[in-house]
Length: 562
View 1 (spheres, rainbow, N blue to C red):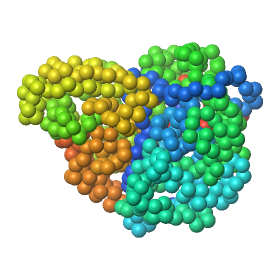
View 2: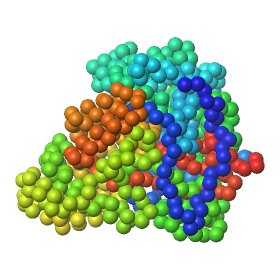
View 3: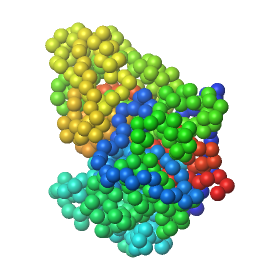
View 4: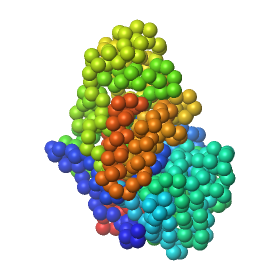
């Protein structure tokens, strides 16, 4: 694949949301490739059916000293402070979005979610998808002037697999030869199939993985300097942080982060010199802050968007972005009662999931599978569970709990959402069981999913790259670190392997469809709805639209006429 000539900016104008016009959800994806990642693997976000902004990482930062003096060429945006400044150590969407501005990966996703060259100028996929060779751009450097080499890429990626401190998204590299062995402590770094010679990086895979050029765009796989300070593992900005991305962080307070354009960025200095990221609005409404002209771009709740689109002044400044994300319920399948597929089927058939979604938001799109709309190869079949009250009762009886008799205490845990109480109510009415609901702060909830998953849980999974593997393989394949419910099914795994073994789009889609039919029958998860996001963007600010993976790329922002 040769350099397409794509640049990070300047951008084209972002189209406004038209008033009194039907809203269309859909993203054009131009890349057809083959598979992989967790979080980055699709990044975790709190379940967010109400459309509120993503939860913020909680941390104690140094006291603020007031807004710094800004030059004429600046923009003020609302964003999240990263929970850590080390990209290998983050697994939430907010932190990843922040770090994607300062650390660059080999590839990047453009506004249409197509894979484009970034630090890599080109790549070749050979050996039937089992080998990818990246050629780095000539003359690329870190922000302090040190050259970026293939050795920097290899070292950065091995940090993600470090068995002493593995990345929460280590599965991004799980198909590389020797990666899982090194991660588990049974192998060595020398045996990992990442080879670097000068400006060339060769990646060898245990199975076909042409998808990897897309996965390489993940912020988790960004290139960092060899002397990245240990303090980057925390929420405080290290002094004089050396970066590989479009912006260099200058300062951080408890309410904002100041970024300055990196003159050594591979695409040249970004069109906007300074970006002031407001990480706190002091409990003020985002709409009020925008109307007070204190901010140029701010995400807003879906409920606010519902009335703003009809406003004469604010309506033309409203933006809607389709998100390659899915909200879904999951079961921990390694212990009763959800080790029984009949119990899971009973839960799936007892609730009219589409109705719940539309009652909460008439414009929402109920999920027809775990893979969002707009992703090539997802298939057109409806793989979602359908309500069947008698079938639900029969399945529960087949599992040994007729009319709910003897069914154990079960708790549905989430970080807050619109549907949990309604789900519990319908299950009690139809199946005669009691489902408790527990809400936890997102940070605590995410940690619990990693260490001790509850019986039933919910996640909002945001794609790290546009491919079915980012949802099916990473979330459900046997042994995946992102398979929260630890479900395992040989038929499903075989279908995922078939998808990985071919670069024929038709055969690959057929294999993924086979995998989704297994999911529909065995119900390890219940897909609920697909995501979107809303924001207010100042007139004249070009390029202000999130990609499908939920990031606003600051390097693509520019002021019209400046």
